[in-house]
Length: 212
View 1 (cartoon, rainbow, N blue to C red):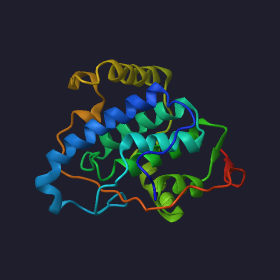
View 2 (cartoon, rainbow, N blue to C red):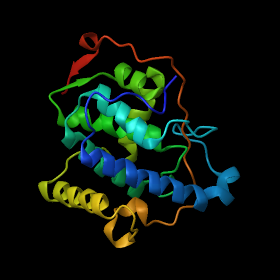
View 3 (cartoon, rainbow, N blue to C red):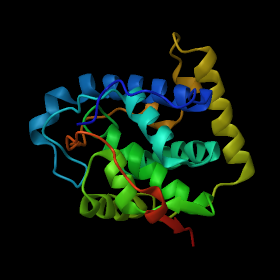
């Protein structure tokens, strides 16, 4: 079982805290906006029947604790999430899909950014899904962003600034300061499901793959 409160090895970087706070606000807002249309929403690989019990913050803490990817991977994952929503406007981020979108975006970012990263089976275990689902989500996500993985320095800095503003303006909401997935009018939702597990017991040495 994935527990909502897991002990942390170290303090989570501010950028990840800001990202989790932002995504929490977005998903809750879109829950309310998409509720009247839920029974008419189309099925996708990211769909689930119920909301995960683990909070977004705890889920990101879990990824940070086990994935060992660079801080820059989370910035790039944040950029990829925004690109996904820009290209898939009928699949808004909400409480049902946000966890799977997070784990997939971090996986894709780590493969692109880091020289060494864990393989899909490891990320699936961290994310509470099967390896087959992780493989499918990765492919769907890549097609969803049109395989646009390159990030310019100026774009990276812009999104860093957005997260910095989130850190100092957490209690104030202004659409002018947020990326596109915060200001769209959503009427569809994408759901996610987490598999319960008693613990994460993984031999990391057997799960590392060289990024190509």
